[in-house]
Image (cartoon, rainbow, N blue to C red):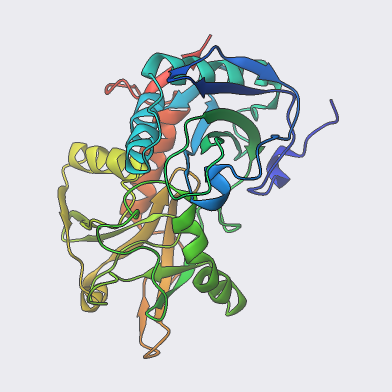
Length: 339
């Protein structure tokens, strides 16, 4: 294997040795199969291509200081993938099958798990797609479950350094009662125009407002939003937000640190009241936000004026990373050690 520049890794695709596949045919899931191919062959009328029957997950494995490889909250990702499957009328994946597929994919590619202290991790991508042919708008009868992995660096190039984000009002990521609360490709496709424009204008990501009233913070691009004020961790409550497993975990850690936790509507005007704000998710973990600019009005909300992350965000980040890397006790049973 060619030497890998672990510290220089982008958040992108990296070819590894093997992926895991499983097929749903005649109403049941088959056995796990190992493949060394990066490609999938499917019918041109597959429902994933025409009617969006596609869902995925994002997970990470970490090497700890003790050299053990740990996967973070594996079972929660399995539950979320099944919620997505249910939302798109795809068959759910049995918890045991999901767990075995993830562990097998990591084990077979164990040499690609970045060493401890390099600022990188092994990204795990479970994918569920409709492969059965349909021309009418209806669910497929055949499906494919794939798990591939690859080493990645930070999602935002700044890493844990504060980023700038832009509020957008002329695009929506997802509609109320639509697919915003499940992890499907269509939500990300809908966010691309606003996100790419934000990048072109010098921002790390776009922040979307609720699609119905354009009054409340919804998603921070590819991650959940949170704000800190008065020893309280505040994060949006919305039917069109993907429930982040990282956000779920941070809420538990915040309470453990003696903070109050609130999930509720966050009016745009309240941004002026927060001491710290950030985006959180599997890919980003926590990305502190130093400035938010409303693209329509030009109004600015400025945080961490010294260019550093706020003390609460830093404490939350270090605690979560400590659990993921085995430096902190796993008192909640969030970790699966790869044997």
